[in-house]
Length: 132
Image 1: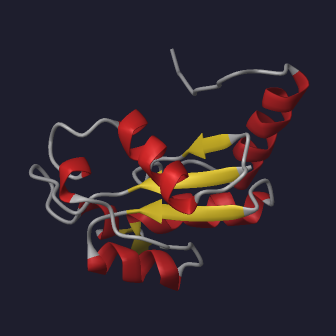
Image 2 (image 1 turned 60 degrees about the vertical axis):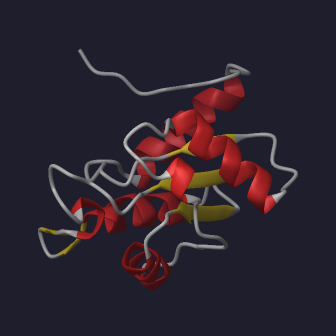
């Protein structure tokens, strides 16, 4: 299973939000660390168009094997298009893909392990989080 974290650099409401300090570390670091510590993924990739985000992602252990095209980095780019692009670019044989957002500081390795377990146990085609 592969984990792809989309993180573009062009946020308008909160410039640089993906790497803003949040309780002592960049916001994206929480998602990267949870993904790596879960031991669920054979690869954790950040899809970005921004060199500063890429540097922070690498610093916290994620891979940044490519830079996303500008057409997938504007206000109209969709998550499914970004994830499809990342899958195509890494040209991997992964059958299962996790999209984990960079702005999810409350995600934990335990939550990801539990979700992955249910995903496999229930033989899901897709799984997403929701709250009431």
